[in-house]
Amino acid sequence: MRILSWNKVVDMPYELVALSVSYKIFKSTVDKNVFCVNAHSNSLDAKRVIMGEYSSEEKAKKALEMLNNAYQYAEECKYTGVGATQPEFVFVFPADDEVEV
Image (cartoon, rainbow, N blue to C red; front, side, top):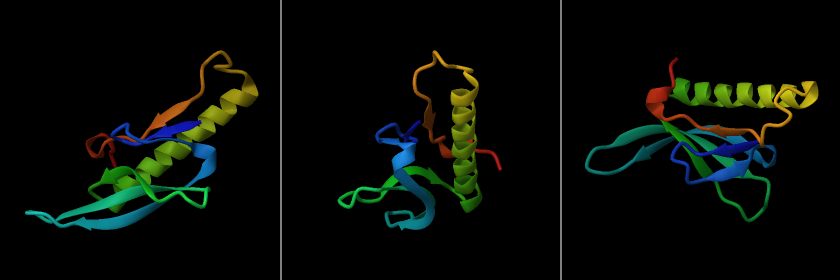
């Protein structure tokens, strides 16, 4: 399964990354507190990539839950034959306003 960042700039294979939630403060004219979903590639030369930015930790965790549910569905489809003709599954991290907690 492929995962795309909320802004559709990053495309990674789900099976080759670890995901985590972190807190970040952006300094600008107005400080912005953001919870990020980060992807960490298994390759040694890769850096952390932000897959989603959310206004609360709960929303970031909910986005990870949504990804997990999509992955479980994709795996079930593989084993049951449902969607066998469907191309590879893709999960796009939702924007902050698309996540309900």
